[in-house]
Each structure stands twice: as structure tokens, then as C-alpha cells.
Length: 355
Image (cartoon, rainbow, N blue to C red; front, top):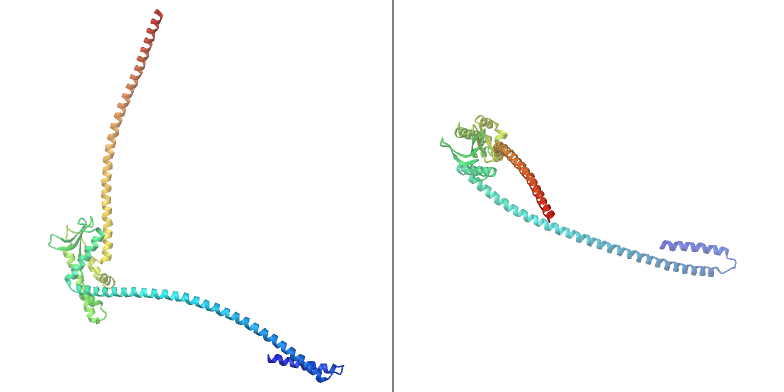
């Protein structure tokens, strides 16, 4: 603003000088300057008024636009805040639900931990471990073949040599009767795999574990493989997958030893697979047996059908003969009927002639 006024003053002075130089009417310089000054002040005042008014209008318009923009921004911000608050509220609610579920899961884990501790305390006793293995074995047999299916298997089966197997499977030939006995060598196994124990302790436990396994293999081979009674093989059931995996991964010599003794080592998973395969074999044999029965019945039916055909042929010929006789009788009947009609007509003609 100040620079504009200064520029106008400079321009006014220049115009004043020009007028003084060109003044031909010998007008008083003071009057001329006063008049020019008055005009200049007037113009400057008008310009200042117009300029101020224009500035105020622009400022008001700019202020209105700024307020409108701020209002729109405020509305947008409030809208975003509401949306974000709603999302945050949903997220917070979901987090609370998850925390509740986690808390429930933690309680279940604590309960499961207590159950595991209880199970470990139970399995420390050899007798309870034996019962655990037998119950597990019976559960597997029932799942595969059905509960109490004594035609396929029996629990606690007694042989004539005064031995009792945990389970006996009556498989078809050539498998035959297969004994399944549950063993659970846990103590030395736990010491062997416990990393907290020293190498010497673990090494000694490994030797004892192998000795336990060989002892169980020998016992099953000598008790439950009976010539002429059972199959030439038996099954050792380990109710713990971890022990079975340990043997297959690090103690394959035990598998070779069991193979020589005709004893197959199984876990719950592999036993189910083996029994499922045997179940398929049993079903196929039953299907083949019934197929033979059906074949025999079809042969008998073929004989009966041939006999039926012979009798039907005889009956057909008989019916055909009777049909011919019936046809001849029908022809004779027609002839007799015609003869009677002819005679009747002759008599009626003679009577009319006499009249």
C-alpha cells in the first residue's frame, strides 16, 4: 500500500513539472500546485477507498471460502473420526472376545496339563500301564471290526499252553489265528530321551530299553506262536507312538531282531492300518465264498430250467394235439349243423307243397 502511494506521489510531481513548463496562461504556480494537489489527494482518497473496499471484499470472500473449507474439513474429520471410532470399537470388542476365548483355552490347557500329570502318575506303575495298553488295544479292535465281534477277534484269549494273549485275531487263511499282545516299556525310554540327564545315564538307559524290547519280543514269540494253532507270526502292540517312532528312527536293529522272531512291532496308527488291510482281505474272501455259492445255485437252477423246458415241450405238444382234435370236432360240428339245416329246409318245402 505504501509503495503504491509513493508511486502516485512521484507521478504527481512529474505531472506538476510538466504543467509548470507548459503553462501558457501565466496561472499562478501556487494556485496550480494547490489545485493539482487537491486533485491528487482526491484521486488518492478515491483510489484508497476503492482499493480498501476491494481488499475488504476480497478478504470477506476469502474468509467465507476459508470458513466453508474449514467447515467441510471439520465435517470430514468428524465423519472419519466416527468411522474410525466404530472400527476401533469393533476391533476392541473382537479383541475382548479373543481374550475371553484365550482365557477359556488357557483354562482348558491348565486342565489338560493336570490330566497329563495325572496320566503320567498313573503310567509310572507297570500294572496300570498294562491296563492302559489293553484298553487302547480293545478300543482299536472295536473301531475296526465292531464291538464284541467274537467271530473276528477276542480279548484276553486263552491258549491250550496256559498262556493268555491280550487279543487274538481270527484271520482267514493263509494268515490264520494271530495273537496281539500289548507292551509298554516306559521307564528306561523316558530316561533315555530326557536331555537333562547326562550322556552316561542316557546311554545306560538305552541299553536297558533295548534289553526290555528284546525281552518282550522273545516272550511274544515263545508264547503266542504255536505251531498248528496260531499263525507263524504275532504282533507286539506299543500304545505310545513316540516309542514306536524312536525305535524306527534310531533303533532299527530291534526291528531286525523282531523280524527274525516273526514278531511285528506296531503302534496305534500302524496297527489300525494293518487291521484295516486284514478287514479288506476278510471281506474279499467272504465275497468270493458267496460268489461260489451263487455259482452253485445258478448251476442247480440251470438243471431245473432244462427240466422245466422238457416238461413244457411235452405240455405244448399235448396242447397242440388237443387243439387239433378240438379243431376237427369243430369242423364235424359245422358239418352236422349244416346237414340238420338242410334236412329242416326239405321238410318245410314238402309241407308247403301239400297244402
